[in-house]
Structure formats: C-alpha cells, structure tokens
Image (cartoon, rainbow, N blue to C red; front, top):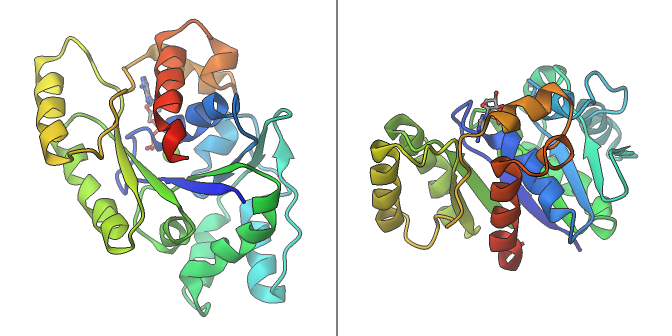
Length: 245
Ligand SMILES: Nc1ncnc2c1ncn2[C@@H]1O[C@H](COP(=O)(O)OP(=O)(O)O)[C@@H](O)[C@H]1O
Ligand SMILES: [Mg+2]
C-alpha cells in the first residue's frame, strides 16, 4: 500500500510545486512514485511537460462524482515517476465539489486502486485552503509544509499545522529559498527550530537559480543539472525524509 504525502501551504510561491517535482524524483531512487497536480494553475504539469493533457485530474474527479467510478491512467514520465496532470478545469471542479456529498473524501476513494501500484503518491496542493486542498489533506499519511524564511510565510504555516494536529497526521516544515548568507534567514530558522521542535526538517532548500530554470526546460533538477546545489539539497532532503515516508 502506498503512502500519500501532501505538499501544502495556503500561501502561493513558497515552493510547493518545486518540492513535489524534485523530492518526487529524488525519492524515485527508492520508490515507484506518482505525482498528482491538484492546483488549477497546473504549474507541476506544465513544469514537467504535461500541459493540457486529455487525461487529467478534473476528468477523473468528474467521472468519480457522476458515475462513482473512474479509470485513472497516469501519464508516464519514466519507469519510476508517473504523473496525473491538471488543468484549469479544476476551478469548475471545486465548484462541483461544493454540491457533492462527502466532498472532502472523493480523492481518497479515487486513490485507493492506485495504492497497490505506487509506493508513494505526492500531491501538489493549490495555494488556498479549499475543498481541493482538503481532499489532498484527508488522503495523506504525511503533510509537508514548504515555507520561505520570511515572517509572512511562517504565519501561513499555522492553518495546515492546526489541521495536521487535529487530524493526527504527521507534518514536517521545509524552509525553501534559503539564503545561507542572510543573517535574517538564519535568525528565523533558529527561532523556528525552537518553535516547531521536531517538525522542522534539518535539510533546507537553498535559493538556487537552477531550480527555477529546470521547470523552464520541463525537467526536474536531476535531469536538468545533477551537479547543482538544488540537486544536492533535494537528495539530502529525500534521505532525511526516508524514515517518514
Ligand atoms: N529553492 C528555490 N530556488 C530558486 N527558485 C525557486 C526555489 N523554489 C522555488 N523557486 C521558484 O519560485 C517560484 C515559486 O515556486 P513554486 O514551487 O511554484 O511555489 P508554489 O507552488 O508554492 O506556488 C517558481 O518560479 C520557482 O521556480
Ligand atoms: Mg504551485
């Protein structure tokens, strides 16, 4: 049975999509991984070369809601990494979900047949705390919360953290776009180590241009620049998280 990991923070631009793609590829050295794009902005899909696919998450959601069943066919990136891409239709889907009974549990049921195929399922959440996000969170065995070492970004952690604690789901906070020479970043991280005791990962992700460039080339960091510090950071992060996934 696979483990399901949501990467979530209701703030945008904190690195959710970057973490899903690159942590996914790093963990694919050990596991068969399925990436699912749950964000109507579909950055994970376009960032890995799967924009506007006919087989997408909205289609599967609609089939599940209307016919109670859905034949999901993930797209193949390589032997170890598959993806269910998204598109802008997820905005309409969110509206449809509002009229659906047990709306926050539809994805969990959809994932059930996939759990015997994949070791790990990683969910890229939208930058809001809506029904799509709730579907992801209620499906999860672990929640990863990326944040920038900035005060507003840290304030954004609270909502997801509260959900995780109330629902007894383990969670880990990952600082992303860290500037190791910034005194402010170091101060914020040191304070967070105390405040989030045990829930903050030891391996942060540094600010690395190659991580942004990789998506421009529809690649993960390992296939774009395997010797970059971005590749190093995601390798270390994956190793650290191995006992929890
Ligand atoms: N560690 C990093 N170093 C440099 N650029 C980054 C890093 N993490 C994310 N980015 C860039 O910042 C932007 C927002 O990241 P993204 O993963 O899309 O955030 P989110 O999914 O939370 O909105 C993207 O352009 C991405 O390429
Ligand atoms: Mg995103």
